[in-house]
Image (cartoon, rainbow, N blue to C red; front, side, top):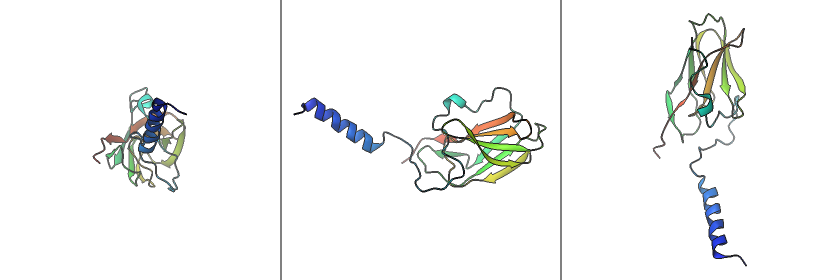
Length: 144
């Protein structure tokens, strides 16, 4: 026989696991060329180690932090970097970088439905691998 306190504790655990405690929704069945982005980008913020010769921006510019992943556009301008080709990398949950696009120093690319708040994009010089810039998709509080 279990005590009342144990029963209450189990009820709290069950309810908390069902509620999700404010976690972001996860898309199911979405085929994405890039794994899920970093959930907590605090450790790898938008500020690179050296001043950035490149700019990255998104369309839409920001998303609700509870919004489902969607199609959007990633834009970049690394024309002041001197690089002839740019690798656009998406940082994954485990911190590795997946190649999203290789293109000229100024460009844009439409995503699949995996763009979401917290997505971190890094621009690298294709020839040297040097980081040229980075940007995290801005998150605004959920209004739902």
